[in-house]
Amino acid sequence: MSLKLYPPGTRKGNKHYSIYGWWNGKPFERSLGTGDPVEAETRFLEEQVRLRRQKAVGGEITYAEADAAYRAARKLDPENDDAKTLDAIKRELGPRIAAEITGADLQRAARKLKPRVKEATLNREVIVPAAAVLHALAEEGKIPWQRYKRFKETKPEPKPVTETVAKVLAANTTGYKHLLILVLFDHGWRISEALGITWDHIDLGAGTLMHHNGKENDWSRIPLHPEVLAALAVIPEAERKGPLFPWGTKSGVYKWLRPLTRKLGVRFTPHMARHSFATWLVDRGEDDHGLLATQNWRDPKSVKRYTKTNPNRIKMTLGKLKGIS
Image (cartoon, rainbow, N blue to C red; front, side, top):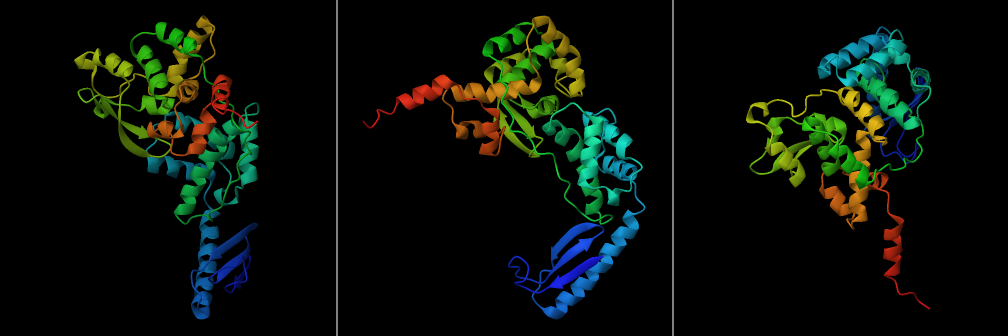
């Protein structure tokens, strides 16, 4: 351990005393929240004691044990897609001491587990879930908290489908498969959000749904698209309980969706419906505010990642300017 106490104004304009140095082989910096030298010295000593205790406890905990505690705290279903993702990571990192795992370790594990996928997928399916397990342990004070560096992602290219493809998919599905296609295209939700809908969320009389945004972890009541509402209305009363859809996981959807797209000769994944939803609205003149109002996004930057502007619309927009010569 090589930590030093720095007075106010000596580290990046710090207003309070701060600790800076190296701990457990990693850079460490923390503000002590006080400008009083006596209080700062006391807090500095207390922080060193806390770090030593963390190292002593953390040196006994493996990643597999951290994983088990994370699942128990969140009551993860073993058959859930998230649980299956964690299974693969645990097989790779399980015996490792949790406190010794670095961002580089996670990146190596990601490359080994998924050698032929893009950086965004590596981040989503390995780095982020593994970091969540380790951060949960750090929040309990059992290992030092650290930031686990993700792979640098290339800017994603929106992948909308044409409305013709969407209509072909709708025309070649029935029952709950047909309803899922409508929900994905008419509302632009993530597949996990669609599969999480239960009849308790639906108010057919009001034509609304309590929608859960998993990424933001919040709820909002939104109107249902008329096409979706009409499809829900014909579902027998006896079936209006529990989950709306019979597939508990994305893998259950792909079991019938992949053979269908091969048969139809179209390229489609559920997430492409989300891209299509945003792109179609933009092509019809909707602006960022309109897309944000759908409750699908919270950040205008996220909206732009999902939209692909039609060149004809750009031409029409520029045509509104008469020129200056």
